[in-house]
Amino acid sequence: MIEIALVVAGLLILLLGAGVWVGLGLMATGGLGLMLFRSTPVDVLLGQLSWNSATVAELSALPLFVLMAEILFRTRIAAAIFDALAPWTTWLPGRLAHVNVAACTVFAAVSGSSAATAATIGRITLPELTRRGYGGSLAMGSLAGAGTIGFLIPPSIVMIVYSVLAQISLLDLFMAGIVPGLVLSAMFSATIVLLALARPGLVPQARERYTWGQRLAALKNLLPVLLLIGAIIGSMMAGIATPNEAAAVGVVGALAIAAVSRDLSLAALRQAMMGTVFTSSMIGLIVMGAGFLSTAMGYLGVPRAVAEMIAPLHLGPVGLVVLLLLVYLVLGCFLDGISAIVMTLPIVLPLVTAAGYDPVWFGIFLVVTVEMAQVTPPVGFNLFVIQGLTKVSAMRVARSALPFFFAMVVFTGLIIAFPQIVMWLPGLK
Image 1: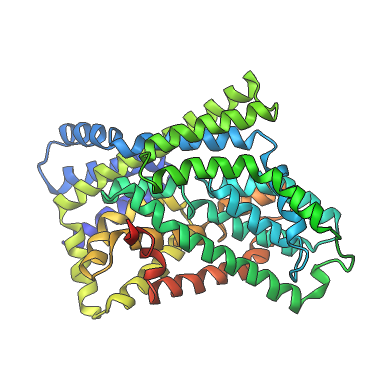
Image 2: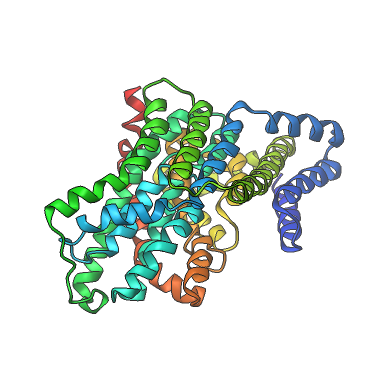
């Protein structure tokens, strides 16, 4: 069995290394493995499983949430969020750098993507912070770290994919991400405070001045996005709408915001729809490939072989998740987060549940590891987004993001030690 596992892993590495699309690589690996070691009819199995994976009800929320984010990306919502939050951060060490964290946290609640969050907020905050004299490393690092919250606070594309593959409630997963997302946001702000105190030169001496009247007046800029957040998350938590229905509400709300701000044009709408088609098709192909590979590995006995390899290590539950954390950190250097999850979940999820961990908790754990992958070179998507905005090297952005990467490592330790951080809100249902 171990030999089969090694052959399957080798096939996958070979195909992905050759530049084959991830979804097709997963399908080809499963198909070749079955043809080499089993007599299963690959064509029949592939057709059935591809259809089953593509028609899961929870997956229909994916293109709607992607469309919502694509529409909002083409509006002036990021500028409105900056104007609303900037007056409220001036009393903290690091001052306006905290706007990156706060704005990404707010926008994450109406976006399912880390890269989209970083790009939307960064195109407003990075030029503004640079113009006001904030150190480039602080501005870039805080955006790279805070942008990852787009995966943790619902709605989240990664959570939708995980819920389909793990066959758990998407609503439970969404609820489980709220408290950890807020805690991680607070840790990012704490990191900015420590950096500002340790290196005062990162923050300009001239202090922005706002009256209480200006602060209160600025909050009106947050009203549209807060209403949209309430419509999406509030309707799900109150049991009024399913995630699919909430996604449809989100699209209508995004269209309304774009229309009121006069950003809604036929050209922008066409761009948003085409972006949605590209993103949803890519993820759909990966999900179909993952579903087929998962079943193929079950037939080949790969999960059992991996369990037999790990058993002699005598790892306890904590030791197991620490080992998995290290594995996902390495994978994150070479693969995007969704690909890393879909390729490994069929093997690791049975091990984790056997160790006593809740699949919902493990989903949030995986999302955090995916967030880390967003800021680790050479394949860190947030690094590329910020590189495109600033025209500096990806390695310089990665160095700027390093303190925030360590904040995520500490946060992962917290949710391992105190799983109730994740499970408290779903437990209130």
